[in-house]
Length: 259
Picture 1 (cartoon, rainbow, N blue to C red):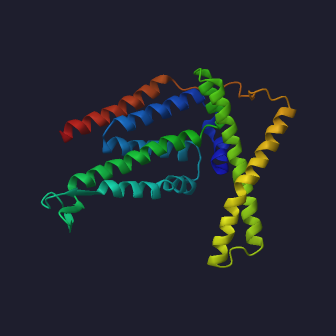
Picture 2: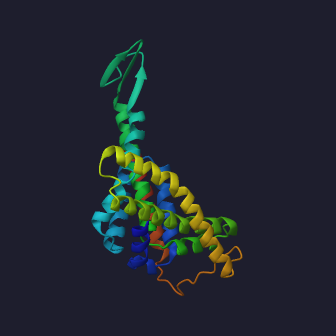
Picture 3: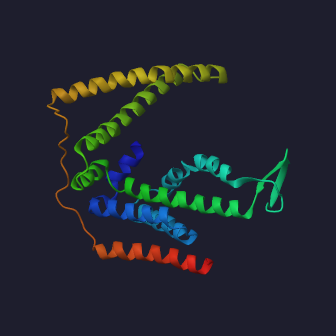
């Protein structure tokens, strides 16, 4: 989280209008969720990767590591879609017999998993583009302009700040355990990790109470007044329309060719 926040503030794309970036990311994300086109997904992954790495100056190694974060959850989810059940084995490319049914992999299940794999990564690339080019304060400012309820914005802002408190507390405790050789073997490591989890929540709640008290001492009345950049660079909205039209066109072309 800290790394993402740091590169969001360092990114040259930060100085562009956050409304356009949020709108662009949401439109492309919705297009990925609605369309069923492998060509569109690959195009979105390449486009968002190019904008984030080339224009946003995010290190390619960091970007690849971030893209691999949801891979474990994605593989576990795709395994449930890859295998299918049927009373006949003719529809499967590979199958095993289980009691009165067959469990196997079919051509259709492979296609579904392939489309879902690229759809997820295309959607994730849209979110990473926004997170690595726009600080959280600017994103909340956009939702404020769109008349999002104030209490939701305040909750989002507080949760976002308390995430860093949680991470710092966990890192400090973990470093202290390592310094005391708490992970020198497997059994001791399990015990140390259990102690870390059991005390982490208590310490985090105490830290949150201290931070909230400090906010009240500084006149916090339920709303944050944050300074924002006075002016942003802006691109013609025609560019956004052309990109969206191109993506929709790719989906239509693949649908026509596939049909």
